[in-house]
Image (tube, rainbow, N blue to C red; front, side):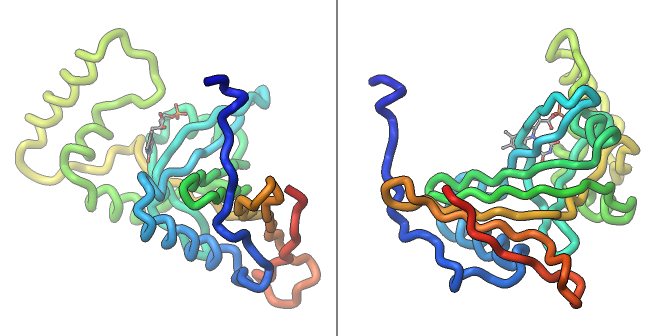
Length: 216
Ligand SMILES: Cc1cc2nc3c(=O)[nH]c(=O)nc-3n(C[C@H](O)[C@H](O)[C@H](O)COP(=O)(O)O)c2cc1C
C-alpha cells in the first residue's frame, strides 16, 4: 500500500452556520462533550505549539483539564521546554484532532500562569503516584539513564510514605486565553466546513465574536 493511496471520504454531514453557538467556548464545550460521548480515545488530548526565542516551533500533547470563558487550562512542569518557550513568548496554539468525528479545532491564544491556589486544588486531586512522579521528573532535561528517574521516584515515595505531598514549586498550570477559535468539520468531496471566531472589534458588549466561514 502506497501512502499516496491512503485517504477516506468525510461523510458526517458537515457544519452549518445556523448550528453554531454564538460563543466559541460554548461551541467548543459542545464538541468536547460529543467527543467524550463518542468514547474517543483521549478526547481531552490537545497538541500545544509554542515557539523558542529563534521562532522555532515545537509541539507536544498535553491534557486539557478545564475550559470555560476564561480559557483552556493544562498542567505541566514549570521548568520544561514548553514553560521556557512561554516565558519568552506567551503566544501559543492548541489543536484538538478528533479524527473519528471528522473534526478538528484550532485555538490561538495567550498563556498565563495559574494561581498557587488553582495549582494546589488540582495537584491535591491527583493520585499520589502522579504527584510523586511530577516531583521526581525534571521534565525536558537530559538524563543519562532511566534508573536515575526510578531512583528519585522511590526515594520520594519513601520520604512521603506518610502525609501529604507538597505542591512542587516547579509544577503548575497555564490558562490559554483564546484570541481566535476555528472549527473544522470534514465534508464530502473535500468540501469541508470551517468557521473561525474572532473578537468583534465593533461589539458594544465585551466578549462579542465575529464568525466567518473559511474556504477549505
Ligand atoms: C496523551 C498524552 C498526554 C500528555 N499529557 C501531558 C500533560 O498533561 N502535561 C504535561 O506536562 N505533559 C503531558 N504529556 C507529555 C508531553 O507530550 C511532553 O512530552 C512533555 O510535557 C514535555 O514537553 P516539553 O519538553 O515540550 O515541555 C502527555 C503526552 C501524551 C502523549
